[in-house]
Length: 369
Ligand SMILES: Cc1c2[nH]c(c1CCC(=O)O)Cc1[nH]c(c(CCC(=O)O)c1C)Cc1[nH]c(c(CCC(=O)O)c1C)Cc1[nH]c(c(C)c1CCC(=O)O)C2
Image (cartoon, rainbow, N blue to C red; front, top):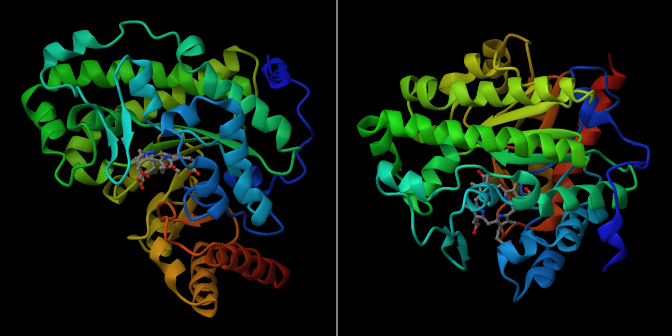
């Protein structure tokens, strides 16, 4: 047995940089914290080298590999947070579904859910400790190996986004198979969303117990719903997750952790999202920062929202874009990030320029107050 198998979720090294956590809670900071979605990814040559020839979910099931991939971007850039290397699709796997990562195609479900009867194929009770214990072990190991440098973020996919993958089998532009369920089988849809919610609550709680210091919930497929469907099939479950995770943390005598909801292309729901028990609302790049501030009324911290493609610009341009963004969001209650994940063809130097620009411009603004 590897010595890491004995690593326990206690006696973690003291946190040295809590800027991200303070910004999430709307407290004062010395600079605006920054991290990037998909910061552990294929744009890094060391990531490509490490992952070469290995199955994606095999990697996800190895705590040592997840730890190494989580730490890689932090060795290069002064990010203010780490996000555990894993994937949102480990939850459908825990429910008993087969998911493959196909090179050049992305995630694929060989036997997707087709009709409500297919729900019987799902495990009726999911013991997250045994099905997803490998993620908890990855988090605990990474918390130790991070040496308190920055906080570690855990995450999950949101119920609607996971449901759409389980029905579509993979990526889709219309999501029409999954949306068909919403209109044709609303009861079965709610049954599935409820089951996903129950697993996600246990899963997120387990991540905090294992050492996650913040949680992000990815509603990546909010954009294919409209405001009415979102209110019925997404928002109630997102709310339920935040409320139940917070209640359960309290019951367990654990400290609250900041929770981030990222509903991509879901700004039609911004007001609702800002009142759904999450401390932070993540934004994609299609919304103006000032409008987002207005519509969320200072109730929550905001995270985002540089267009990932802005990283194809020159260093000087990136700096200007970041300056405008930080000035618009303001330095309080703000976490800089991209509006979605980094792409594999991006230049690591541009990521470095982005991080540096956030720190430099925000420090300048804060020093002039
Ligand atoms: C929808 C979604 C997925 N996974 C995730 C989402 C939500 C965020 C979003 O909206 O993008 C979340 C995710 N996936 C991954 C992370 C790790 C942490 C990080 O952000 O650095 C996170 C937070 C690793 C990953 N997950 C995946 C990769 C790339 C594949 C590889 O490493 O071999 C990584 C680094 C694979 C994956 N996983 C998924 C897709 C669509 C793909 C294929 C993407 C592609 O091929 O470009 C599902």
